[in-house]
Image 1: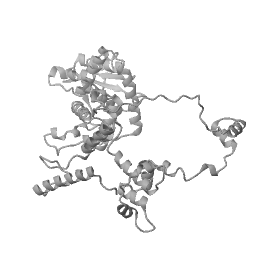
Image 2: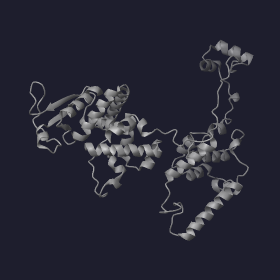
Image 3: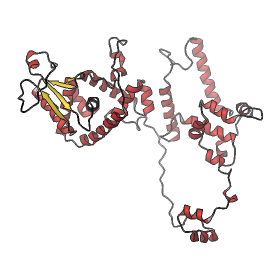
Image 4: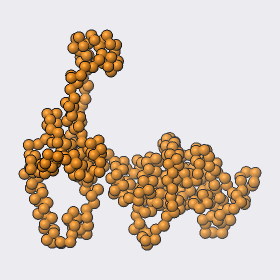
Amino acid sequence: MESLTELEFISIKQLIDSASGFYDEEQQAFLMAEIYGSRKLINRYETSYQLGLFLKFITGDNTLRFHHLRHSWATRAYSYIYPNEANSYLSSNSLNSSSWSEFIGEHECNYPLSSLITAIGHQSITSTLDSYIHCIAETHKDLVNLNDYQIKAIAYSYTLQVSQAVVRKRISRNSLVIISNHIPEPKIKLAKRPTNLDSNKHYKKAAEFNLQKIDQLLRRFSETQQGVSKLAYQLVVDEESLTSLLNQAAKVERLSGFEFYRAQLADPTSLIDENQISYPKVNFYNQENKRVTNLLNQLDVRINQFTQQQQQAVTEGIKVWQARFVPRLNETIIADRHELDNFLQMLEHLNLQLKPSIGSPSVPDNKLENLSSIPQAIEKTRTRKLNRVAVKVQLNDQVKNYQALNRVFFILSTHYRVIDLDQVIFK
């Protein structure tokens, strides 16, 4: 609706000329396609991200995104609908009057707000006015003149938290709402405009994700099954870090057999037959999510206080859970004394009041509880199979079901895989 500047006209003309050239070369290619190679449609999330980087660099404001241009357009269009001195800085002399008349309607019953909502793509006027237009206060602040209304002293007294006598004295002195000169002006140092912009400065790396964040990201992926690019854009995380996190979670899922987060779907190309994908039904219960979040927040504080020796012990115990866990039984089948010690030490260090129940034909009844049925250990030699032990963790008030318990173990496993210290351990 505004006349193009010379620079805008040249840019659009170059874009059209370039598109025409590619169209003449390959008429079946998409307009917004890759320039070379497959000529597939460009990734709009990546494009939006790159344009956002340009905006940040040009303005020096690291909070700006490409989506904010929609807000700017809606705000400026609204200032043309209700022009006044307060919002005049938003308007431009280059407004095309004929285009504007066509936009809002040429007859007496014009429809500017309806046109604005349609152009933005909203279904409700509430979304547009509440979230997209940021000049309503300036545009309409003079519609009501408070000088035309007599405000009683009791109202001033309540608002200013002073007595009515003080209000009357201030009114007589014409100093009712004057700011005291004794209040110093704030000394604020503005940040300098950056000369360059680190595109990943405001993103966390995978190793910086805490346990609760890992659970949130994996749960969001499991619930929505969205692509990594789209999910990273929505959750404002680094795409490379999210990819690394999902890859490590997929390895934990493959080793442990615990398929709650369905992480292997992040890279179906690793499967021999991508069409052969099957996952059990997963239920996301709000109360369970809250309990797991609380447990992970507790563990976040706890593991940050661990010594190097404690970190190593928990890491070794988690490795045992990954390799020996049997999902259908919610038991960890162990056939090695060192692995058993590591698993029990891990439970002790986590300090979640989890008591293991261990069953083995070779263990005396007065020390350890025997289980009636002990599944066969994941071992290939006869000796190890005869040394099988079934470890089952008893639930408590903190951990009320085995799905929540296994989620905690799974998140811990993924956490220790993505931090630099333990990547070497697991490889």
